[in-house]
Length: 502
Image (tube, rainbow, N blue to C red; front, top):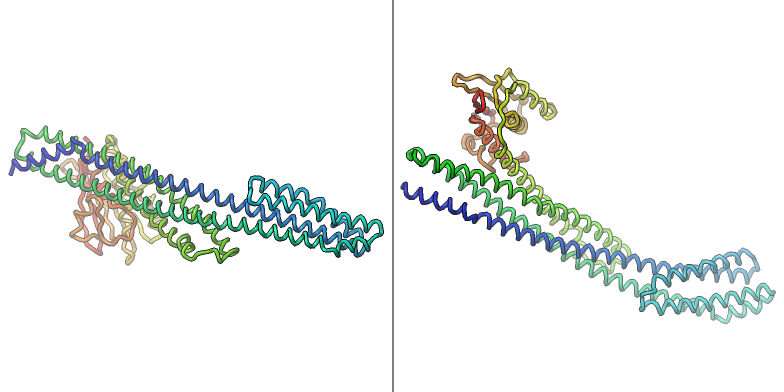
């Protein structure tokens, strides 16, 4: 039996030295980095296609607007011409002249917009020639009118060449509109496909990253349990093998230090890809909103081009997937922060100083006063014996326990939390945090101090690390913590510390 235990310990120690877990985690983190790189590339591609789509839409809109403005001003000029010929009023001639003055600028704007567009360029050139001819006809008739030859001018109008030119110009502008609409529709279809593909890639990558994070968390938990088991075996063996106490204690200390370093490295390195996922989730939400607005416009202006499947994907499927990713990453972020906090506390050097416990605990109670007042509860702090210990650790221990007592008060009765203490004869001091809250089931009295374990109804936020953190801090100060509780009646947490931290 003893030989088997030694063999198991040697095997486990060899596993730590060879770094098998480290290589596995490095592989998982590398895979997560590759997935994030894919997400970055896909998002960059989607943003480029979206920008190109908006540029195409904007240019098409400006080309169509410029062509229509040109036609409108020609119609205004024609209206002024005919009004002048029929009535001889200078007011109509003013309308005509103003329209003629605007035409060169409008024509130049249309030229600039289509300078590099070979498909539309020929039609713009024809528009220019027809506009020039039409203006020439109008100027000729106006000159005849001014010369008191209205009959000849009206005869030119009746020949119908001006109307023929205007009809041809309307046809050219309609053709330009058709070309731009077809381009816009093609670009929109490509943009929607790209957006859908990119969102799918991002969603899949996000799910895979969360799965990897879950695997890493599971490996951490398994590793911690293995270390806890190894420590128990080592303690049992050391009771009969005094000669091996120093060596095995040294192995245990190194293993614990590796746990702390490992927890810190894992939690620190996981934050970088996690922050990227959270950031790109926001980018996806913004891009989805842009696409939704554009599709709403298409739905209004050209409903026959809109597909219900595309609308459903953009307005329901994509937001749902993004919401799932956001909720999961936020939960993972809380878990990483909790592990990081536990690791940092385990590596911190304790500092002993005299502490007025009554004053310190009263400050903690005052800090939760707004919470207790909102639920009609109170925190009573009696005269507590002082001690010499680590202030930060004690503040964290009492802060966690009082905060838990406030969170888990019973809604069936006014809440009351009492903190009391007494000096013991063996150089120890005992503190009790007593509440009349929900209470804890007998089977959970020990489990609540384990990592990632919670008891009772899970209606409060938390990752199951608070009491494990408290127990670890108490033990580091040479103390002990236990709980006495009955379900539905309340709980009492008992803390024992040496009067002076060694």
